[in-house]
Amino acid sequence: METDKSVKETAINMPEINPDDKAKAPLLNSSKAIAVTVERPNRGSKKGIASGDFVLRLFAMGAALGAAVTMGNNQQILPFFTQFIEFLAQYNDITTFVYFVTANAAVAGYLFLSMPFSVICINRPLATTPRLVLVIFDTVMMGITITAASASASMVYLAHNGNQNTMWLPFCQQFGNFCQTASGAVVGSLIAGTFLMFIIILSAFALK
Image (cartoon, rainbow, N blue to C red; front, side, top):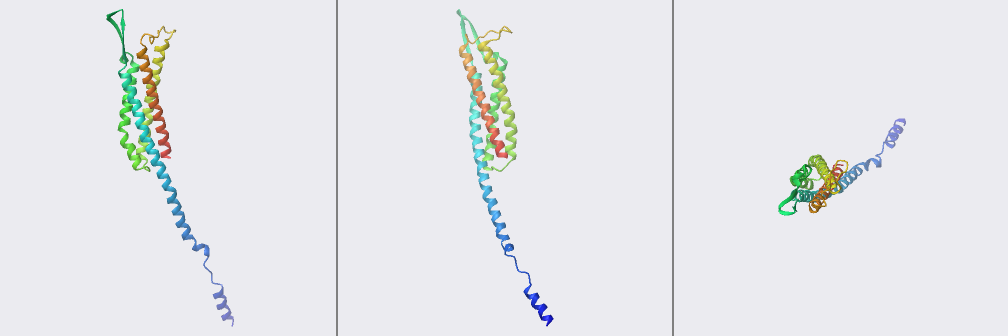
């Protein structure tokens, strides 16, 4: 009789399958589904950032190229008493303006060459290598643009107001068109630098 009792107890006390264990497999599958669902919006947002990067590059290239062309064609002839004697003001008379034209032309050329990399980032929004390369060179070009615009802005200020301490006389009263054209070119270069700054910010968000 004791043997029968032990057998019965063994049969009754067999461990039952926990219903929570059965639910583990569906839970894992659901977590994978959630992970896939979260990844798709991330990919779409990065692709949108890459598209905005491409558009901003077009605007920055146009601004830098316009600033370089405007300053490069900047000159004014001022007649003096007779037509045989005249004064000529050109951008290459001032070394700062020569650097301005060279820098903005180089930035415009770089932005044109960076377009294929921007297209790669649109087609492959999760790729980090082309985006990192663009961030490095974009930062360098932004620095060049800002320094060229700042240096030229100081020269335009001296041309308008002069400097009494160094006895530099203003000449924009005589060469008004020359100074206005130079001022417009400086504004265009600053706009290009601003676009580059926004491009770097977008790239930082994309890398994040």
